[in-house]
Length: 600
Image (cartoon, rainbow, N blue to C red; front, side, top):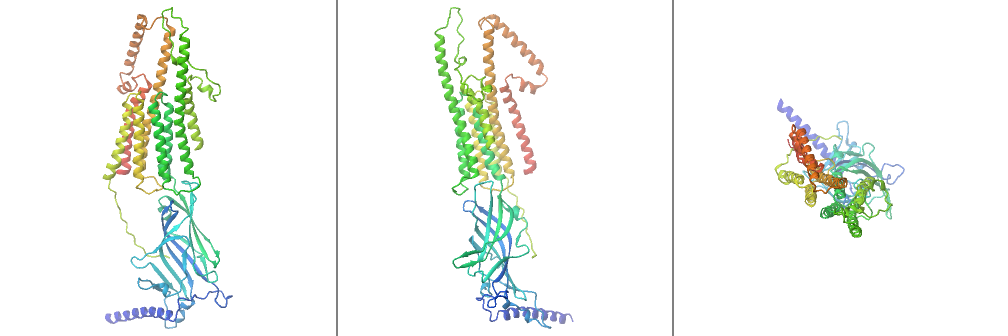
């Protein structure tokens, strides 16, 4: 009994399969695929009007958006629907025969579907390269419905041109197109139209899959064109792409912003520190030039000015201006010295030495008359030297000027979880960065008067760290989110940059203390007629010094850290002492937090 039932089922199934084969054979019999089917417009008695082709696109991925060649790659499923009454098989149905809802014509490497039925000769107008997918079998599908309605679906990978306007790069928004039209048939033969419901479908996660752009919107439009051979129907897909800014913020804007600020450190150094100030200005200028060359290497040579060109040009102008400012300061300082020597020799010839005291005359005490055209005269009038006034004004003008500028298918998914090996990056990135940060701290242990050494150390470590960051990011795509390596490099740059700014503060306070001491010496000399080596003055200074030392020892004996940090009366020295503890402590805290959040 069971065998008999099983035999009946096999016969029924074989009969159904044979029926589908019979439908295909009888439908394609005497069918000429070279002849266009009739349209559905009854007002055209001869041809029935143009064939209406309904189009639907399922976007799978958008990748490789190339700014230099102005092109992008896209993969999508392209679907067309039209009616061919010659392929209708509902007439084959009768009371005893039931036809299937549709018949599938599957493609193979041997059988070409375009040689079996008529199909629209659709081509993509802005296509550069194209290929069909053949793994595991050709990804092509044709469904024939009983009423002659045909669905054609194929998966394509295209490289399409996308003319870009880069005036606002990298703050730009681009519109990339997919234009499709008939190559041979005019609007009298074929008319394309978008499917009414969901003409453009997007794969889940497509908007977040782009590395350097955000897919804001996808629009549909018509682009029917007229040529000397006729009018051709055309459909257009518009993809609005907005460039992600975070990558350029980390790789361009923040580094160039830091370089401009580093060039301003020159205003806080002593005017006599010629090697340090020249090295600082030239190095930042060359680094900014290298930065701009690296950015423009990724862009086409366009004829208009981009937003990035304005940013880099202004940054270069401020750095170049800081270098020219020191040239002006150095020139004014030499003019002041020469004028002082001339006045000294003039007044020294008329001095009376009969009292037995040596004249208290120095070049720093004799100043040249100043002009009244300074706009910041109330602020800078206390500085007698013209070179000092230029530095003071530049400390305000440069930052202010820079701030003003500034159907449902079954689907299976396999997820591969890959863990990146950490040892390579530990040796090539993390250990060298830690060493650079530690080397920058050597500046805290050098003497505050070692200007060339401390400036060269800070600038060299900063530039080396910038080069290290550029080498790492050159191997990565320009993604829109912040990576763990960006946080690491950013914090390391901040610590090195902070060490350089710390010395600018130390140098500034050191010069202020030196000026106070010189002023105090002159005041003591004017307040006492006795020579400086008089026994009375020596005893007075020694007793005052002993009393002050005794007071300090009693006050800070309880706290060894306060005694170590604040026992020195010089503010510039205190800044160095505090930095020796503060920088390593904060960096160690960062290492712990970084390990907990990312490594562990």
